[in-house]
Image (cartoon, rainbow, N blue to C red; front, side, top):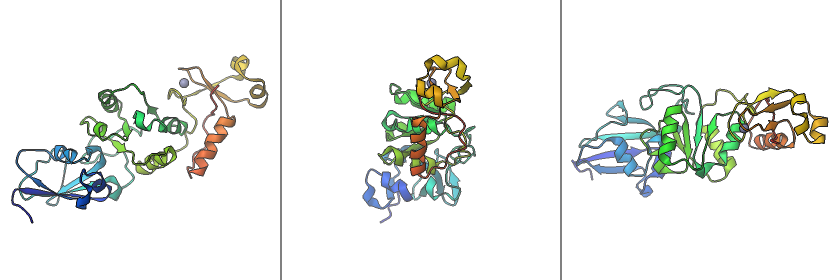
Length: 264
Ligand SMILES: [Zn+2]
């Protein structure tokens, strides 16, 4: 029964599964007793604001500052139900009016297996196991990065604009989850970054690194890239081939190959 002081919140799609009490089929009555923004209210119920794509009430689209009132009905939509899905972080929305320049990632330690895979695909991806939640949120907003994490507490931080609560535990599934959730403008930068420190690789003359190569590498390969930060050398060796096969098994069509892999 509707109580006059209640607001009714409808959590659509996968947002309903994030509720602290998921057995309510996504419908929650909220007793309006104090001025509370929709962001604070939904996060107290377990749903990080980063997971919400649109807020509708009384035929109007709202932002996270919406204050709940008696008798109000509010629908909260995940990105997956938006007609323009997957999410394009370079386009403004009501909830995220300042778009990012490009799709860049900040990866939490709890999904760190994504880091080398995203870098191998050419995505600018930062990660440091020693960063605190506060440091990650600050860095994400300063550098315009999407935060990937399994931590709801991190994704509730106000500073975070775009984020994704990673649902799966197997790293390959996590990668597909990320690639499916965000609009990818191009997959032609594969193997253009250092897998270890995210730096964009530069071509290096074989003669300059000859003494660092194993005899077989020296004999069979002529094209090399180098990281100017960690000085690792990359080429199209067996490591490169294994990663390409791994991506192919996942149905990830990456290419043309812009660089090489196989750290020394
Ligand atoms: Zn490096």
